Length: 55
Image (tube, rainbow, N blue to C red):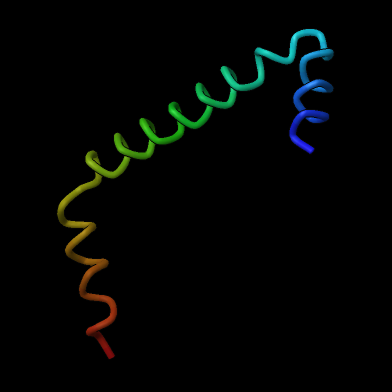
């Protein structure tokens, strides 16, 4: 089964760009997410952590 898929993918012109693009998109997403998480204000995190304890 994989031989047929491999053969079909090898015959498509320009198919080698898709793995590179997907790697760039996912890497950019996770780097941006990390920057957002580490750049979040400590006060906002403390406030959100108290939400489940409030009535």
